Length: 175
Image (cartoon, rainbow, N blue to C red; front, side, top):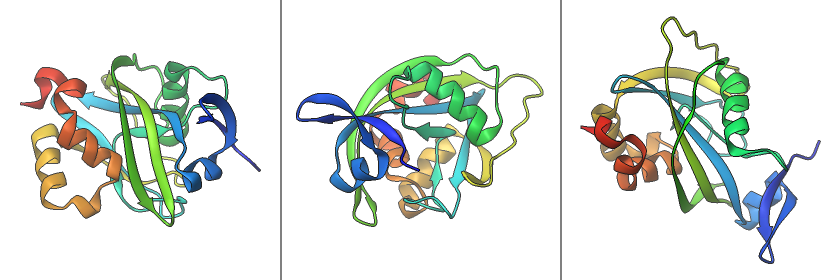
């Protein structure tokens, strides 16, 4: 089954096969969500079956919109699909663009809408094993240190967010 996501082709946003987008390194919209619990964030280790960056740690969820899907709706959908989390209020923090080799001849060239959400009291996390191998909560300073000391354990986009965009994403929480 082909999954169509929006990508810019010849300057026009076009529904494009997701694998083709990554094989060709096409610029495309994306969504990243950081679920927070005070100064901690929920991170996930990507399932080993993922077609790129399997087994690497990433932010709470990261994904591509379906054709015609709003970024906010996409963030809510993927929190449910990846982590079994519903009912959070997502706050748009910023939009960043990056380009990174993700292995296997694939490139992510994303224009990412980044959201944060505060975990609710008693919120349960039920990872979908097809998407997520495991999850953990980690304080932002500890995550920044781990990413710097062991970058190979983290996805390229999480490394970019932590190295270049912490203030834009987390504001005062980063200290």
